[in-house]
Image (cartoon, rainbow, N blue to C red):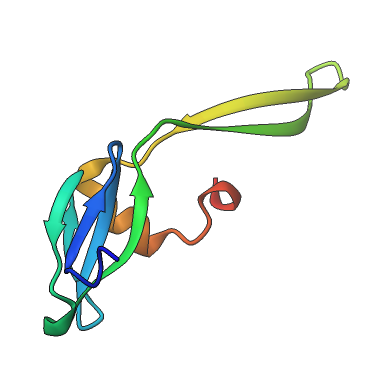
Length: 97
């Protein structure tokens, strides 16, 4: 319904990607924004800025030829000033990490 009134809400700890006629225009910060769809503006997607954790299990060999399974926890988050790069250049962050 908000899209019919040309108003969109971006939640806290997220940013939204605004496109105009399919081309990137700007990153919308949290809050209420005017998005005139009749002038070609659209919301392409949302990106969370929250800290996320990925657990990776890897098998490695020590110096004395013993194999050890290690679980590594990787914490990552998108930077607000690089949100457009994170949205357009990364397709699946978990598999790419």
